[in-house]
Amino acid sequence: DGYFFSWAADSSAVIAHAGDELRRADADGTEVLGPAAAAFGAPVVLPDGRVLYADASVDGRALLYATGPDGPGAFQIPLASFEGELSLVLDDSGTRLAAVVSGGGGGAGFSPVSFQPTTTDQGGTRTPFGVPVLEQGVTVLDLGNLTLTEDSVLFYDEEPAQAVTFDPDASHLAILTSDGQGGGFWKLVEFGVGTELTPIFRPSLLFTTSVLPFYDQYATSMTPWAPDGSALAYATAAEGDAPPSVWVQDVDPSVPPYRIGDGAYVVWQPVT
View: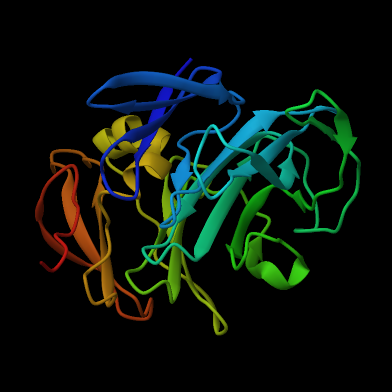
């Protein structure tokens, strides 16, 4: 069923999505916090301790929730609905969220309330509410006070994404996109400016099999971005007799990528 996790803000516990459950694990043991839809990966822990996760709903969709200020086990705030599979990546400041929806219906982006799912409060009363819809593709949201509107949308791209990653100051987002022939390229989004495409490359086998399925989980602990946000690194597959190799791409895609050596996987060490 899969196991995906994120660290609590103070690193005292792990919040995990295991099968159809949301769990909290710390030095004292493991606690089941409640149900969680199988159609998403790693939960996201905000700086204030709130947790973003998904759970099943009605009409073939699922709901993106935020827990209350006391964390999981308190109350849940519905933020948005989606159809398909959801991956979440938070920027380092905890204010911008990239939501990647795949396997669902296409659409025109983030739209206002379009249906009325129901939720059950602690008294057992089923209460209708309306939430915005996350369409297939990549939506970058300003989380603000966790009340999402169309004004919360900083960027939307309807094309499917294999992975996304924010640069250190969240001024750029790199979106790994497939070329449909076994290769891929980075879309480098500069918020408020535009999007540029890098040259096509074939990602290494190690990256595609061991990292891509869990990229939302790894996004909180490792990064391909240089600490100053000037470039990102990636590993390409072996070609003929040539081994896998590591390349660096400048944030300005007009600067050609350059090879720095052999290697099947690469991350950038943050400044300490």
